[in-house]
Length: 281
Image (cartoon, rainbow, N blue to C red; front, side, top):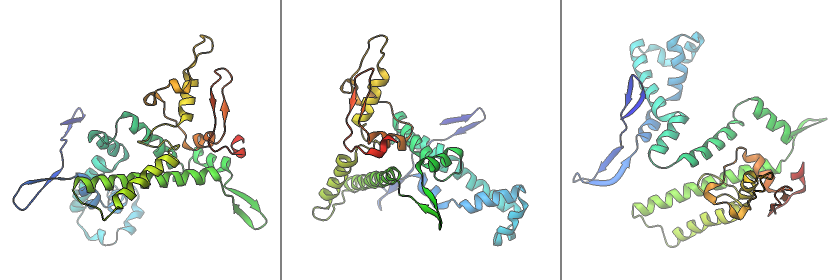
């Protein structure tokens, strides 16, 4: 039982257990997220909620066959959708449930938040998101109008996201099939595992959700811990991987990875494995 506020208690349940023909537990659990995902209707909840509350009367023209449903039934259906959205489908609840089920912890939750907030810049028109477009020079004005400019860092970052997300999904699929004792054909399992390992070996410099920090991150953390006045110095190799602080801006970090650096006060050095001249600007 979880207390949401002083007047509300929320029951925390395990999920729906799947039984076989003899009524025996199969070990398979259907999460309530499946039902929420299957039953939730965002159009009916978000648009028609406004219509019910008469905040935007013009939305009545969008209701179609919904207009013929009695108001009481509309209200009940909307309450059900509201409960699904509130307890399962908001971003905060998704994070909370992932923590509850041991998928995420405090550190990995922070990493998810970093990427969620960063990627939100490209779906919301805010001052920060527009500044990214201006600073990265997505376009230039020509006699024919606007020309799109290729940006290496944004393109590389997009590919890194795709690569790591696909690897993550593939690893979960392999784990599920093994847990269900489902054998893959011939050497498919070995092939898929090697692909996931290759993602980490070739592109592990993108410190994502569950993988380890790069040498650059240890270099940064060592410099952060140094105190020149107290003559207290740390080297990147002195920093434990579990102690490295996570970054806040994936794009800025990626650009920094492409330039070799030397901290003058500490003497620490980072040699970029793939230096680029344009990373200095």
